[in-house]
Length: 160
Image 1: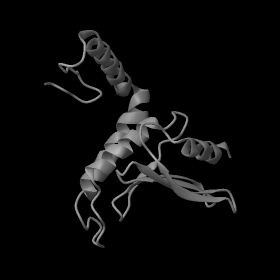
Image 2: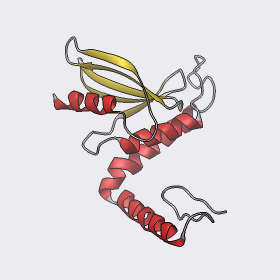
Image 3: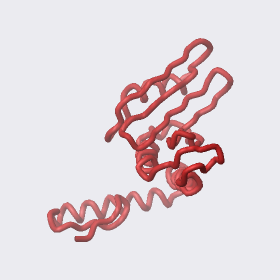
Image 4: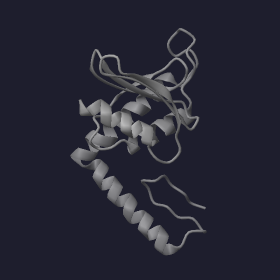
């Protein structure tokens, strides 16, 4: 059995030749886009930053203050979240959290900060200041799509 990631060649005995062919075409298209200037800025460079953060923080006590290691599951979930963000949203800053989570942070000013955090547990924690006195925080399930609550909060955050 030969299986590769989403951006590589894919073959599996249980998948038809036509499905494999379509998968390969889509993979080639994705690689072409990622290698473009737009793809580099939108996906490749942020992915590299995520992987560098993981390399730096994948061991216990990475901060010298008993921080939990960032798990591989947290990295994969963060990568999925990055890919699901609308292209109209600027790339966030990626920050390691002492709880072993990876945070996505957008800062637009003292009263305009929004943070998403993922730990590889099929959930996103969020917190934000969406203007003076407009605070939000909570947790939502995260599987295969960007949760509607997160979409709405991002629209609100970048609307101002």
